[in-house]
Image 1 (cartoon, rainbow, N blue to C red):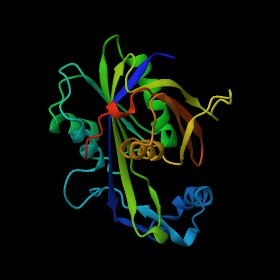
Image 2: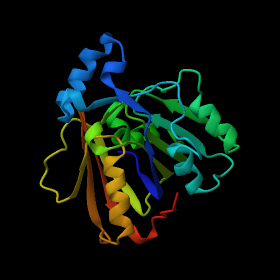
Image 3: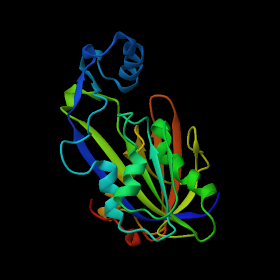
Image 4: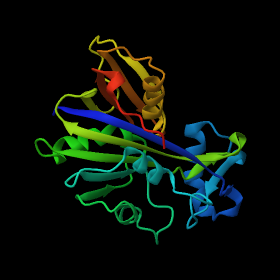
Length: 246
């Protein structure tokens, strides 16, 4: 495994109220909706579907813009990776181009979509082969779920921003992959989740509260409706991780 480390972690979650009942959509959506409802334990009558083509929030930056802004200015040659769980909700919007323009990003940029629930755990694997020696990058993991549970009152769009460097650091990558986590007897703090940002949000909370001890190992474990993946980190110096407010 290529040695990478996370030096800054930002998170943003914003409510998205523009979901509509399944009955407002064509019948062709029903088979997929039934699979999602069964996987997430949502009764079909409570399943909501996001309205495509509308802004995610009524005002202010979206979740990805907030998470990226919190990380602060990049270096001139820093690369930007936008990793989305699914497709853009509005086919007329170029999210990555918009971020590059809004933040005047000087380095290279790359967008990847449709990683579904595994975007959060495979992000560092992607950076492992994409980064040159002594390079640094920002990875932006974005989740805008197509479906929501009406019983929860509101759906949420979330984003996680990671500033990643080659070599060891406050959070050093140990391994990652698709499928169940390896069972080799190592003790980890287990942070499970269903969506791509869930485990990172939990890690952010643990770091902010000071729960992680130096040298403690953490397992980010995502098990979604279709796939399962994992990522392990060593919290070498957890107090040194920059946790900017969005």
